[in-house]
Image 1 (cartoon, helix red, strand yellow):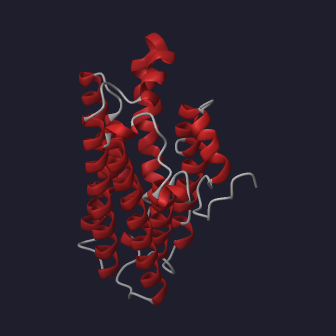
Image 2 (cartoon, rainbow, N blue to C red; image 1 turned 60 degrees about the vertical axis):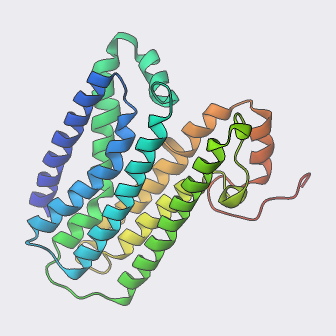
Length: 260
């Protein structure tokens, strides 16, 4: 397990360093978001072949991660291609870091993201290290949970992209579809699908190590780089404040009645 972790850490370090050099050339750290999903797909197949072509469980997990990674990275690439310049989050950091933005970008954007990627990918390493063990009902439940989370994220992203493509919606807040039940249904879907990935690693040896993955990702989305960072963009926006009063921040719930 430790040897495989070291191999994966080396792969992630090299992978994120290449993306940093590309971002440096483009003067755009936003491409770190594109690198995120594809990095997991790379780790999935590195662990698969490290384990000598793995097991049925490993193959199912890898297919799930690959489908998710291709969709997510493709969506983010297309979204950013229609935006002028760097994403507002990375642009704010670039301005705040001043003359230190190069090394801080490398450490705090690319290598830090790579570190989190490595920890979230722990279920892959647990499965690769488990040997040839059979599929069970918990794994089937994990596949179902993954599918629900994946569809939730994909549908939410599609609805948001369609909403933003309408010129009449410029400057407005998305409040329909899945977005009427959660202010961040795409983040909720991503958290759910990684809980599904975790369940595919139960009850293998070291399954409890894999638990770090969904717990860490859910915490990041709800307390660090997901909900808080995005909502800071809408601070003091009256339309968003009204929307936030009646709509759950993360877990989809029926909207509160106005005035309640």
